[in-house]
Length: 151
Length: 393
Image 1 (cartoon, rainbow over the protein chains, first blue to last red):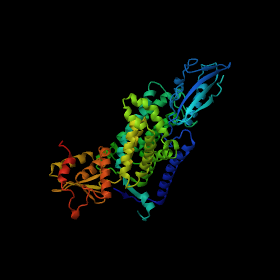
Image 2: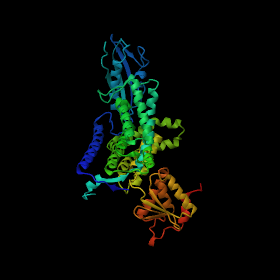
Image 3: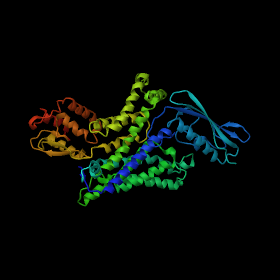
Image 4: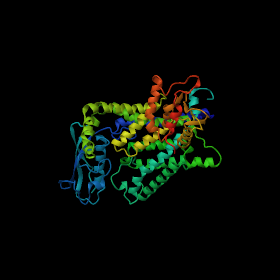
């Protein structure tokens, strides 16, 4: 059943304003998603079939480069980094939120691991060689470097 | 419509939101499913902030594990209250706050299904969702009053605008992406997950055609256009039923083929927002002395949760459903109209009902002839009524 209730003009204006703000905010997120790697609230699911894998090394203070696949100084990568496929960078797998989002989060993960592994006193920084394949295209290689660890 | 202007009418008109009550119940349950894995992790002390995490905002507070666990428990309580309809609007607001807090605490918690959950929870905070299927409504009835099932039309339209966004935004983004539109994205995924399907016993004879370039060039264009059709078609009376049918098929297909957490359940539940916000618009006439008529009346009393029908027992009447525009559906078409408007049977009957509508629009089928002089069309109306009533229970 539809019926009407009396309402003043200011009330209508308020309602119209709320609608404009809510729809405007949603539209902002949808449009902004085209320029953002993460596309939050922009509703672009399954946007890529891309894959990625990474080989991570730690560079020690004396310049040696050591693969961290099997752990280092009591740490293991998958115990420190989880979610979005970041826990298993060593094998090629789907970049579920796209290559750009994966690279961005992976860079942040490298920085986080560099900053929050206090028992590791020998590592200067981490480096990663990331191979991405965007939508069955040609492989691309990206070189990432973490922040320098605090001493 | 005090001054007769359409704008004023739009903001003053109130519509029935009984269906939103059912949406509230479902979203409450879905929220419990959503929060459960987080709580399972948090109870033994596993905690996202002990590992790599990315807060949405630098200033966003990071709770300790006890605080986080307590917040999740509050959210679960809110979701339970939401499902039960106890202080529904407050419960929706509380649940929205907890779900949002959990997502905003860590970008890695974000997912499109969670964004849609937040959207629906926002909708339930705006709309009066406790009007039906709720403890709130029961309380009102106990006081001898009828629950007010109405809400401002603009509120429903606003929430509908948000609810159609996933379809339109997703469809448009794929429409303008040459890789998606050209079928490259999905062909690649199918090729990569082929071994999974084979491992599950799907025969190669079925996979080969799906993996073929020709299939992928056509299929995914159809999917993109379907998404856009759902997002736009839900708004218009002529395409409303078709869009609902397409949406059900779309969500079922996604649930079968992909891992999307609670998105499919939310998508199906969200269709309740698009139920026509008027009740008892269609009149069911049946003979109360006829056992088949009695069974139909009983089933409608039990299953017409959204009050689509006004049942008017008329002695000697054949089974007829008078549509919104006065058109009188008889026989099998009348039965399908009834079943297509009942929440439990709608997904299964609505596609066939769509055929009835198309036949009526194009030329008028044997079940949908407008009767002359008020006579009921269809010679076997009583027989069809028995079919519609099904076996005696």
